[in-house]
Image (tube, rainbow, N blue to C red):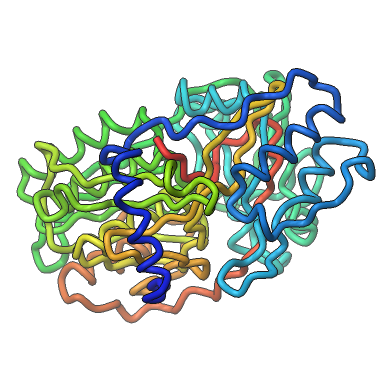
Amino acid sequence: MQQLSRRARMALGALAAAAILAACGGGSEGPAQTPPPDDCSVAGQQSWLRQYMDDWYFWYADSPRPSAMAYSSVASYFDAILYTGNLVDFPADRWSRFESTESFNRFYGDGATLGYGVSVAGLEITGLPKDPLYVRYVEALSPAAVQGVRRGDQVLSVNGRSAADMVAADDFSVLTANAAGDAITLRLKRNGVERTVVVTAGVFALTPVSGTTVITSPQGRKLGYVVVKDMISQALAPMDAAFVRFKAEGVNDVVLDLRYNGGGLVSTGATLASYVAGAQGNGRAYAWLRYNDKRAAASDQRFAFSNPAGAVGLPRVIVLTGRRTCSASEQVINGLRGAGVQVLAAGETTCGKPVGFLPTSACGQTYSVVNFESTNERNEGRYFDGFDASCPVPEDFTAEQGGASDPLMVAAANLADTGMCPAVARASPLSRRSASRHLGGASDERQDMLPR
């Protein structure tokens, strides 16, 4: 994490008063944006995109400006005008993307997605094609779950293509469906037994919160454990139920499992953080969203901590993190730290995305480009290298997530009991790679930080 320089803090502070008036404490739908084009031809969309980026892109002044005439598609032109990393404080833009508006609205409106619902540990073994490829997560209501696919299944092949080949090519696109009815054939192995499973894609409801339980550590501390995978509005009710239970049972520590949480809505993350901080955070800034210099005075937004009835109000929290802990889930860590809550993390370094999107739609596509950076109450931000784990621990994908043999949970219990890491192998260094920007309308995992 980087604390902004004194000069930067002064500049940001000068904008704060105007932003408070604009945001009224946060949680709005965000500022009005560039109107969509009247002409949805390729040239019309490219012209609109250039205007929109000039108005709203965080790096508008430092991104390339090639002639649109050199590009035959909107996608190729979009790639060509993204910021390439020529500033000292900011790496290249590896996050901006677009998808169908139908897909975006399904995810953030309905809390659903189109796909197979099976996710593999490909990122975790990048460059290691001889390592086994495991299923790391299966959405509970997905077609994959119906077919009995489980975390810990070893993937031998998909549609006849070997797992080793997919890992070597860093290509797992076959697991992203393009339409309902698409099918994949998985060759899997568990406990030495191989099986073949055919999974047909469909639309299914996400399960953004799961695994809620209260466990007892080896030294008798009560730990409230909850998995939060997606920061969407559908997470609010089950999050409330989880923390009401934690408060009723008098937990000594809370363990937030964010290892696969790519982010989502800032307001949902703020609510989650508020359940942890309670009165300590109430009224403080959870996050400031800082737009480009053209938009800052009117558009900067402040999201505040609240003090919900189910808040446990603990001085520290244990967070399970990984390479996929990103964007609005990293914002939870930064926001809590800004409010003075001690954050202990077990797992791996997070993805490093302290920037977010104010999505806008045009011609059936929704563009999520970097529009702002996020800072906390203390104006800390720009953690592009991610947050390092207090206890660096590698995952065991054959262990039940959150179970007694899960190395991250073993580390969390040790942190709760002693404040120290157990004697476990260190996690491997984080291998960064660009996330796919064009998701084809079929992804159930996103790296988002959206200002609502």
